[in-house]
Image (cartoon, rainbow, N blue to C red; front, side, top):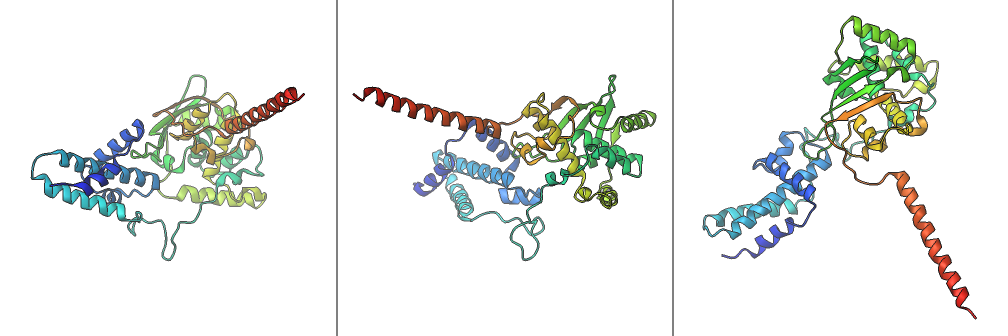
Length: 351
């Protein structure tokens, strides 16, 4: 029996790809463990487009390889299997896209797309230089003050604070934090599973505030700082923010994520810190994700980071904007030089 259509369709899915991409697809295929990628996504509540794209590509590649292996086999038992695999693959390719089940969808009734989130980067504009210290002091309990201190010093996400951040006071009075990553994808390799940051808090917050909080940590032998699993902490923060906004309107949009943006802005302004270290400190595995957070022009002092360790190396995706500008200028100079050289040569050859 011949399998012209089956072979052609399968061969189209086994196109040449980078070794790293093939390895990523192989890992995803193993996780699928025979399941259809759509079923796997529904069971594990996977909603991000990059993760879904990897699952789909890995599944199609795996099914295609099974078809090719079956065609090469001499066993008659493979006939029915090849037909079934071909039908699955062909059906999946003919579908336009993947629509998550209703219980996983972000969209509400009547809406086709989820609303675009407004960046919290703008929330830093107009705030006083020591706004972080002012906000921490305004919180009513030491527990909330410590939680805000951790976010201010490490840029930890609220989701990571719910998991709990471990801390240790070093001999030089710096603080070392171990953060369990909240945005980690085994499928795409995104995010850092964990990161450790050593921070000189005295370079970030007001001295009297640092002294007071450090004394409280030592007195109560605190080793983990954690916020409640629901949104009660954010609501308390919102109430304090609204109180401050009565006197200065710049406070109106401040949230816990504003502290993360300020953390990024200070790191970007510190020329002693490498770009990859900034990504690692933010809990990113890619060098391009940090561009969505605070700008160096929004700095308010140095970030205070003295050491950064993370679970995974940073993946390079593209050159920084600064290097792109430099390269474009260099290219322009090169083209101008060639034009000038050609003009001069023409002038010399003219009698």
